Amino acid sequence: MTRESALVVPVPEAEPLVKDFRARFDPAAPAGLPAHVTVLYPFIAPEALDEPILAALAAIFAGVTPFDFVLSTISQFPDLVFLAPDPVERFSRLTAAIATRWPETPPYGGIYSDVTPHLTVAHTSHGIEEIRKTLEPALPIACTARQAWLMIMRAGSWSVRRRFPFGATTP
Image (cartoon, rainbow, N blue to C red; front, side, top):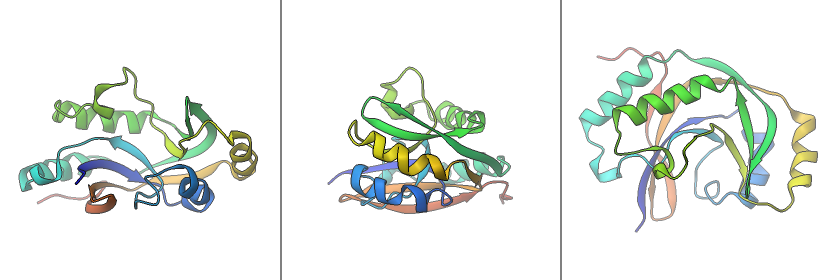
């Protein structure tokens, strides 16, 4: 049984536009992962997520003020089409803060030297023109990052373990 976790910023404003492409071309979508910008994946194994870790996450995210961003650019990596958030720096700082606090969980397992915050639309190198033709007229999408979610993968399905509101007071 696959068990893993991820920290993401949900982007509900993008969901109506990207939902169909994600359902077809992103295996994480049918498994329950909403449209999002990844903060850190993979994170700590679900069975190791104890109260001190959850409290530390809550404190980090409480220090983040909700922020606005736009999704206005369609970009791609090999075999991946994505929407790029602008400005990107707040997402990069979140990733750096979590990765610094838990160095044993580097972004994407440390396989990339540079991490680019993004909202995945499709894991494909085919049909990119169809994706562009559909998405471009609907851009830009105004968004607000209000919280981070700790997502858990168990038996092929993602679920929310904990929501961390940005700017929340912690006990």
